Amino acid sequence: MKKLIFLFVFLGSSFLMAQERPFQAFFGIKTSNPLAVVSAMDDLAAANCPGTSSARLMNELFNGGEETTHTIIITYPDKMSYMMWANNFTSCPAAGKFLQTMSEISEQTFQFMGMPLLTEGDPNGDQFFQVFLMDVSDPSTYASEYAKLMATGQCPSSYSLVAMGPGADIEEYGTHFAYCGFKNMDSFLDSYMSNSTPTDAYMEFASKVADARTLKAINMSAVVKDWLPSQ
Image 1: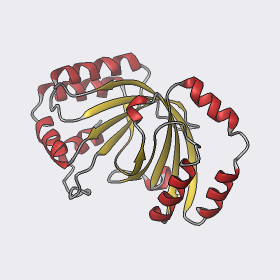
Image 2: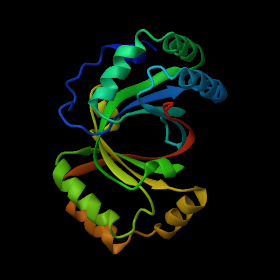
Image 3: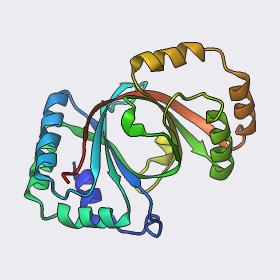
Image 4: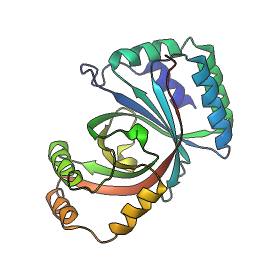
């Protein structure tokens, strides 16, 4: 968990901090005891320390040969909430206990910051996500074409394009990822089965972004639990 501790404590404020917009931290873990992970996160959330961000635990259901079993997502509403969170985390006893517990029940597989470039809908209302990992050489063009594709109804709920930032293993995971959210498994399966044959809209999209992106992997994940700061 050394990398996890480093990111929590020492990450500076240079990552797009000039803009008042949400951004996130992603921590991949490998664990054989997911219930213990939930319990550890319950204890940290109950302490409400630092209490300026929300957390979500994802179960990686289908991710090929990737060893990650779960992903912890921390969302910071803006730069001030992150700065308060980073400063408080170092002096929060519950945070120290959380890190110790996690080092005993899990192994970190990746960690990086992420900046949403394009987001529509409310991912908090979705329970299943299809995630597309990719290298994007022209984010502006890709975002524009991705938004046009989503406007055709390819995704029934929330969707986003996220730029991977500090900590990202670009060679392994790419420079960006996009996701499409689903309210439940039934909605996901309906979409998966109906889109087994690419639509004309998707084929046009694929043609226009052929020189702007290289798809590296398609994963599926599900929400285990959300934790919100106490009001």
